[in-house]
Length: 154
Picture 1 (spheres, rainbow, N blue to C red):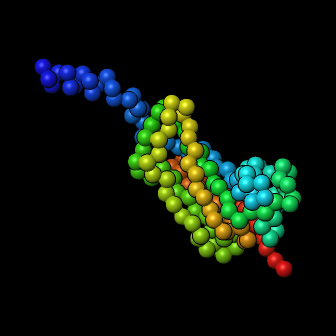
Picture 2: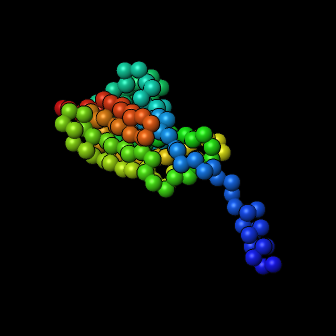
Picture 3: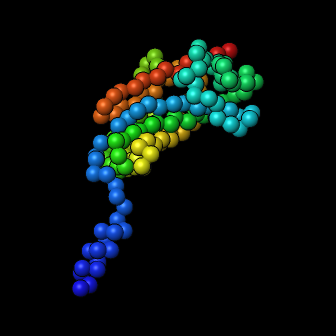
């Protein structure tokens, strides 16, 4: 009797998470931490002709008196159903554009996609706003690279 009740309870209170082990990379966006206002910029990868010089960003929707030192990468994942994967679902790399020096590298593990069928995972990048960079995210389904035109000089 006790075993029947335990099994019945386990079946009724266990969340219905999909059995799919496929969580796919969808896209990523990048937002600067604007130090004057303390806010995040619009997605700079969507701003036509965005550049920065001496940590001062220039582009539509960003006050030209702002400065930044850090930025946030938001990586979007999707699934056909509610899913959880503990293994790596994607790898992210931030490197210098011209010499390829890797500044940051990470795996996305233990990713949960809820009933909304999409989720975002953040990566904070500190202190690398003074040279051109490339951000690359590689998933099982696609590889996406975006260049960041950050420059500094005298």
